[in-house]
Length: 327
Image (cartoon, rainbow, N blue to C red; front, side):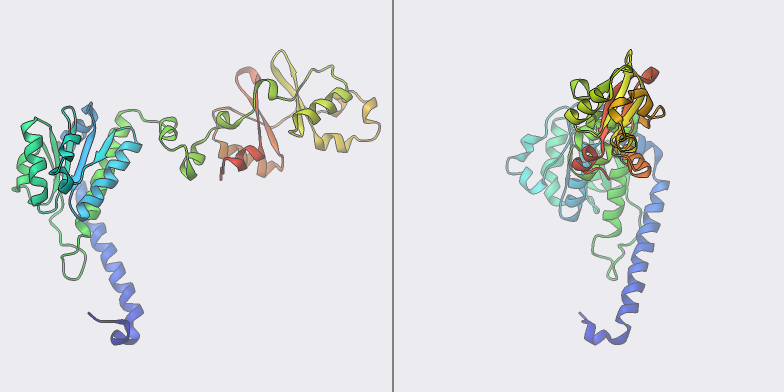
């Protein structure tokens, strides 16, 4: 094994060259997946779609890491899935595989000996299996109801042994099946949010309705309200804005800025002299990130949320978006 000192001044160029070569080789292999047997693809996706239990993903070594990731992707897109380690399966974890499940097994060679007990168990219980392998003549392929063959292309490393091309293709196959089934199920943003309530993914999918204030929390004024009433309502609710509403419909808003611009003899003025009759509004189903973008662009701290017929249904404040880490 060479180290950097032995490689000399060409080490950086060598890194870049090898890096781009590997990317090109793996990209070519992924492109070859587009030529996969359509009947096998359809059969595999149908098995997952029809599964009334869980999709049990299993594989050894690097294939195991990919199987674990596929299980996670399936689970987060509407298909219950679980990873079972083939080595642990022979020591009691076979009980995690039950009738109604579908087995998804990964092995580049198709002859991974640790998978043997899993395959036998599944066959005895008529548990259908999907195989991801490079060998159509392997034990794994022979046990499977659907075989998704990896491209017959070498691994991307210089010795053609380290799992690289094969694991990348296996991962892409898993992603493609998960997305195909997800779309067939009619899986929507709201469903995705249910599985990803935390972190940036959840924040990106939050809607205005999730964050808005409503009901008694809303600062609301009648068109006939006095400025004293307006100031008290805005102060008590603490949003820096109040909505002028008649029969449920939003007519106008009055903001802290409106008060400052009309500070002289403000208590002697009618609300109608101070309010803004073209308030900026947003729908409850809009993404919270859209609301944040509007507030930043308009340099306002809050938006009224309106539904049909311009009915006031809520209010969203800049701070609500920031607390939810909406970006």
